[in-house]
Amino acid sequence: MKGTTPFTKEILQQILDVSPDPLLITDSESNIIYANTSWEKLTGYSFAEVKNKNPRILQSGKTPPRIYKAMWARLQQKKPFISDGIRDKKKNGSEYQISSSIYPITQNDVIKYFVQIQHDITFAKKMDEFRKAFLSLSAHELKTPITVLKLLTQSHLLKAKKRGEDTINISELELIDQEIDRLITLINDMLDSSRFETGKEVMTFETIDLAPVIKKTVKKIQIFAKNHTVRIDHLIPNTIVIADSMRIEQVLLNLLSNAVKYSPPEKTVRVSMRNDKKRVIISVSDEGVGIPKSKQKLIFDRYYQVKSKSKVGFGLGLYIAKEIIKKHKGKLWVESIKGKGSTFYFSLPRFV
Ligand code: ADP
Image 1 (tube, rainbow, N blue to C red):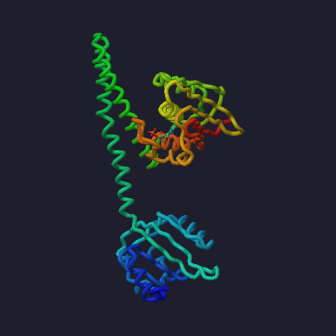
Image 2: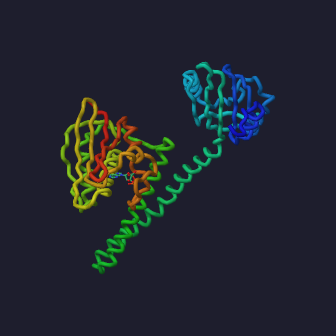
Image 3: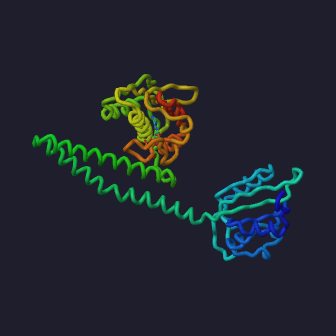
């Protein structure tokens, strides 16, 4: 081949040294045999200082032991291990969080070396914490002025109606009132999502009968969805679950409003309920736009929207619903055919 000579050891070393990612190589006994320049810069150790030592010298004691356990289980199976959870410390004692990928290198099916490639993700983690704090703070800050706006608008609306003012004034006030409702939904979703993210959500579990909760929620949606038919196909009375009824109502309301939002007027939305051995399964079906198969898992992710045609929401509704159902030891899933419609299901363990 033209101009190619096999890499010499020196050339290979230079290649590893120019890698912007810190890289560490140990032998099969976990003795350090190579560290590149980026690794030296990250940790503050020189290669000469750590040569033949065990990478244990970097441990801060803050990494959960399960991570090391999982790491050795993978490596012994000769499979790579990747984790964002390792917290190490530098030579100067300061801690850093790394995203670490460790690859076993084998010869004749025997492990010869371990190669560890790292990224310092301390900054990314700090930014993520800042984002969470900011989201929660701004949602709280927005809540008070919006509540005041809502109360004032409603009071003006009431007065205008009493005075029999011209309909333009009234419809403008009604529009303001609706926009405020959208903002309230958005703020509540932001707050809920940050509470679930930080594990600060509060649930009140009680034994409840599901059928009346479903009836009540369907009635609520019928008030808003005047152009759709929303109907209950099947209800099973005395289905007892241990649940937070407000949260279950929230999940159902979210599925129902999505069913209405993503299906054309005049179509029917159906709610049904069935029992299997240990669970009750509630379904909400629509005859709307449907969801392509490739997107059906993604829609439960935070901020994910197939198409952002909808004016309300941030793509948080299904994420929050899934978190709520998870807390109830249930499942939330979807079956859908693009262009035909969707059925969302959630299951809850029955209390017997
Ligand atoms: P949002 O409705 O605010 O966008 P959701 O988390 O409730 O957020 O839904 C995420 C996405 O899933 C929506 O943007 C939409 O694309 C899709 N989706 C949800 N429900 C339905 C449905 N019943 N029919 C079709 N698409 C839906």
